[in-house]
Amino acid sequence: MEKSYKMTVAGLERELPLCKLSDELYIGAFVIFGDVELTIAAARELEKIAPEHDIMITAESKGIPLLYEMARQEKSKKYIIARKAPKLYMKNVISTEVTSITTAKKQMLYLDSEDMEAMRDKRVLIIDDVISTGESLRAVEKLVKRAGGKIVGKMAILAEGDAKYRDDIQYLEYLPLFNADGTPKAE
Image 1 (cartoon, one colour):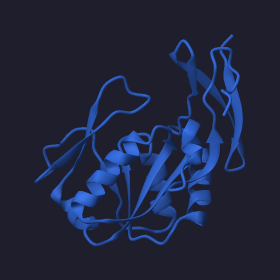
Image 2 (cartoon, one colour; image 1 turned 30 degrees about the horizontal axis):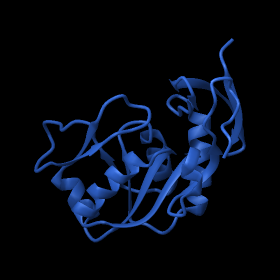
Image 3 (cartoon, one colour; image 1 turned 90 degrees about the vertical axis):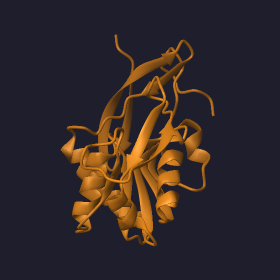
Image 4 (cartoon, helix red, strand yellow; image 1 turned 180 degrees about the vertical axis):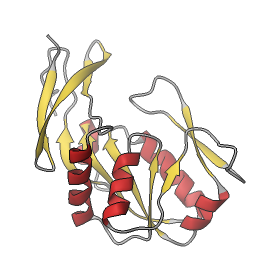
């Protein structure tokens, strides 16, 4: 029988399958892709606590539906996605390296000059679905700073593991890390 973890996020109950990272460490798979109800509800709750900002950014890819929905709810005309690969239409690209807990190898994130200009001297809010080790967040922060943006907040639906102790992020719920038997790890 597959192990899972039941939690309530933005008033909605979800069952997260547990995924093995190592013999001693499992994580709850939180995926908002395809879950329109959860995406809308989480965006609404994050909007209630979001600091004032001019533009929002996320790293490709799991934060995209959340970022889009938050922008839609606040009637923003633009948001920015730090891409995993440079695209033909991107000009004067900058990049930074990132290693995520859910990705086996190092990745790169890219921005182009248009996105950099959109952030220059603006209040930037960084959005993600889950903050765990904070590596993806750090990579996006580097890009925002290189572009001349002023980071006013960092938000996620969930803080996983030790991320809950960070005082520089806002989140809706805590997601523990798990032992092989499916029990939450001691804090």
